[in-house]
Each structure stands twice: as structure tokens, then as C-alpha cells.
Length: 73
Image (cartoon, rainbow, N blue to C red; front, side, top):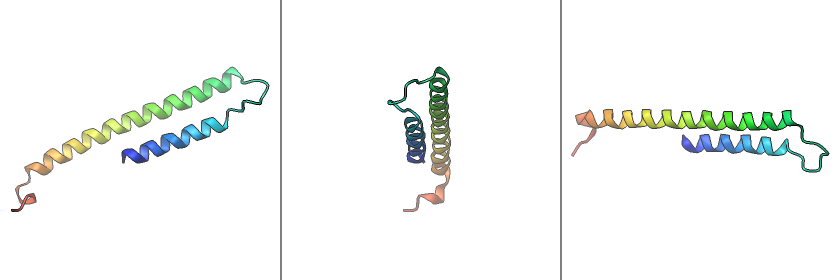
């Protein structure tokens, strides 16, 4: 699941990068702030999703360890 989050972040980075044209005469401040906000939005959303995946995964492992028939010998 974490790899999917990384791929989505990479896609957003590519989209932002294609919006930047170094040969253009001007790079307006509004466009720069739009790129900054979209990058921060993507990063913060992926960070919170990663933390949620960690919490749910940890709870699942702890609950799975409590079930006796799960570990048959």
C-alpha cells in the first residue's frame, strides 16, 4: 500500500514538473504558489495516509496474535 502512495506522489511531481517551462519569459508568483500548495497538499495527504496504514496494520497484527487457532503446530 505504501508503494501505491509513492507512485501517486511521483505522478503529482511529474504533473507539476511539466507545468514548469524554463524557456518561458516569466514564471508568475501565482503559478509558483499553486505548484507549492499542490506539492504540500499531496505530501501531507500521503504522510497522513501512511500513518493510518501503520496504525491499522499494527492493530491487525496485534489482534491476529490473540487468535489461538491462527498458529497451528
